[in-house]
Length: 163
Image (cartoon, rainbow, N blue to C red; front, side):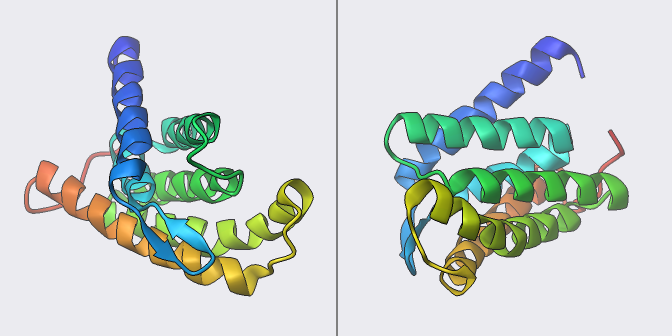
């Protein structure tokens, strides 16, 4: 992909993820669920690959924090989910693996890594049992949205060529 096109596509995904988080969210346990972030992770993982997806997740988290509409725990969850989604999508060449990677990466691994992160940076003593359900609800919802969008963009079959 041409560098200008790649950067432009990344910027569009960042804008969608940042603005979309304000338009579509719901309470999920101790946190707010922002499924647009997870949908963007799946779409970026499928269309751009793992590294751009991680950069996009980082930038969305950074912008949301700078705007006062996010928390620091958005970083471990979003970035790990994007990475795993991109790696699985690239390995198995099917969008459903990107969605599965987002769910496992954010909903489980990211939730567990958020525990020490929240304790260190936010002074929160909440354990994984508080983060996992919230992260799972958000990531499952968003991953399904992302999978539906990617499937529609790619036609009936979400199979795509390797990057």
